[in-house]
Length: 227
Image (tube, rainbow, N blue to C red):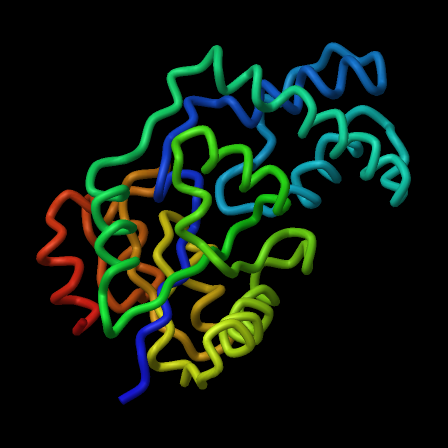
């Protein structure tokens, strides 16, 4: 029997950082490019960091060159820890319990699939003591297109655990329609949670395998995954 591979989204699924990421980007925009700007109307939910940065650059007339993205990323990562310290960032109900249970479950392994850069993911999860639970992951460093991240995660899981993970045994846990689409892009399964900006009715309209209001009912989570 193949093990189940759980791939977790971070923002809106594992934790809610109360806008810390956006504020860190605003601070970095000012420190790196001298622009004190608003991000109102920019779509953050389910987007990869590079795509968010491209939207910001387009608004303020900054060339979206590799060098500028690298400078902006470095500035963002530098200020993110202090912004998190100042924020009300919190783990969402049930998430820490499930991550801990998955780490001990004989039929399950887990990793990340997130639109964050790997360094940003490490800062956010490390802030809550959760980074070490995830030996593999796929990040915005791999592709700025979220739908291309699944094969990267599966390849790393195969290399780390030395086993195959058929797509029907791979679950993405996420809070946006983009997470559902990402799972479907490689034939995986999707459990959507309405802990982000998308209500459950909206998520259901995108055809996930299941929708939960939150992750507080850990027994129901495991029932859905069949683990």
